[in-house]
Image (cartoon, rainbow, N blue to C red; front, side, top):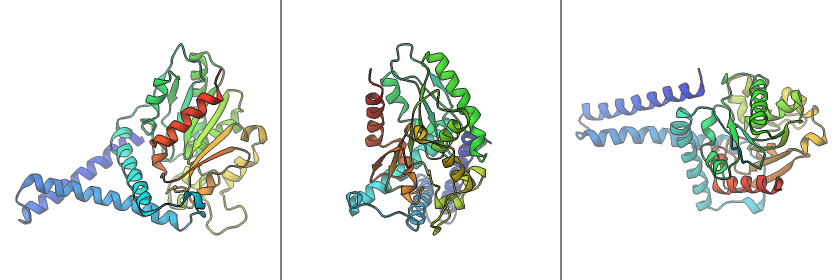
Length: 313
């Protein structure tokens, strides 16, 4: 089952729960006005989703790295962080990803390298709904992928990346592509370079990628989640064996091709410093959650700026 189909089923389940709750309210006489009962049902579903987001932050707090003083948040900023992350999760999983299809757009007059977008665990190409319009506005050719099977090994996605890179290079007539990857997608990009080299890679931008694993992956399912695991409290080599082998395969030249965007308030990657990759360029943000990295204006503007400056002619 694809992520798209799975999310549609989850939406149907949520709608059924809202209707059942509304029916119960009317049936017991607690509410006699159907529109009000339906609103209460929808509110119940939203409340559950708010609690799920809150639980993510709570679980991450147990394994968080120390937040630098420059990134400490006041109460208002904490509420904005939570609200933005909740809305990002709600919009991506309930609208953009259920209707998304991977695609490719080529601009014949493009002067910058084409961009390959690689999403993370449990997502699909719809994750990039806010970035693709910026790429279009800058007339940057781009393509997106749907990484399937959902619970497959990270290495299983490498052939998809290989085909997408080859297609972008051929159709754009530009020899190298830029990879922009969120979360697990950054590990997929690194696995691609391990297997196929960097001859066709201009640069890799990772966003919220658990380069050294995340403790929350211990509660995830699938071979890919197992590869992203990190053992809490282990001082030496807490990363999974797969992550350690991936790191050993990389030299200084490979690491210099990577820029890691990360947030000190990531609610999925814990510790947050797991996104700091030695030898790569690392750019820290604050007050932004994990899913919101792909929608946040500051992050996307900085990404577009980095691309423009790095490949200015």
